[in-house]
Each structure stands twice: as structure tokens, then as C-alpha cells.
Length: 205
Image (cartoon, rainbow, N blue to C red):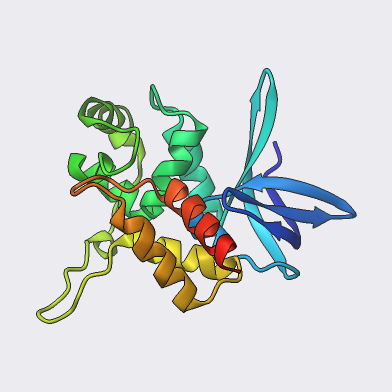
């Protein structure tokens, strides 16, 4: 297995990055949160997991080894493949996912596109005893009076767009447009919203 890659970021896209190592460009599929930390032309290290299928080889990249370990653990649950595991990590950070599984927080889990109530129950049943210890720092922070809470997916999109070279103002304007298309109460599909935002910004440049 390819456990990690280290090299220069040659390109960034909505679904992943190209990391050049010794003259070879490796395509690495990454979540928006991971992409937000990368910059074209700069060096980077990504923890990786190679998923082998009959018709494809896909290298998934992560910000650290802990995120990769959770990605691989999630796939041991019935019905969770690499794409869904990556989507779970795109919507929720590893600490929040662990907390949700350990405490049977089905509401948090079903915010992930592709996971319904039955799927969330199955994930908790199969992974709860294997998810590891959850310390006190995993408790969600509730904003105090007068503090406006920013939706996590908005923050993820903002950082991902910044990593792709767009300004903060451009990111906010694009996110406002794609947010207007969301149905009330609908769980946001972060990767799809990121792709839509990039399409909108590409037309304005």
C-alpha cells in the first residue's frame, strides 16, 4: 500500500490534487478540507490509502495519518465504500465523526449525503466499539449569546476555494449563490457545492 506521498503540488481541482514526485504526477483524490491546506507550487505531505478495484486504482489523500485511519475504518462497515467514507470526512472532521459514532448521534451522521437513518444505525452498531476513546475535547462548542454560528460546510467551502486561489470575497459570493439553491433543511453535498462554486467563479474570470 502507498501509505503517504511527499512532493510538490502541481495542480488542484475540485476533487483532488496532482502531487509531483520525481517527475511523476500522482493524482490524489482529496476532501475539500484537505485541499484547502494545499497550494500549487508548494511542497506537501499527504497520508494516503490506495483503493484497488477491477477497473481502477484510486489514491485517496488525507491531511494526516489519523484521518486516513478513520477513512479505512469507516469502510469496514457494511454499505460504506471509499466515496461515502470520503464524503463523511468532507462533511464532518474526524473528531466529530468519532463522537457521533461513539454516542449514537444519528442526526449528525444523517447530515452526510447518502446516509439515512438505517445506514447510520448500522454504522454505529458495527463501529461503536472500534472507534476508540473520545476525550472531553470532542464536546461540541455552542456559541454564546450574540455570536453567529457559521455552518461547517460554508467554512469548508471557503477554505477549499481559498486553496484553489480564489479571494475571500469571491468565495463568499459564490457560496451565497449555491446556498440559495439548497432546499430548506437539506443536508449539503459539500463536494457538489464546491464543484458548482468553482464553475460559477470560472465564468466570472
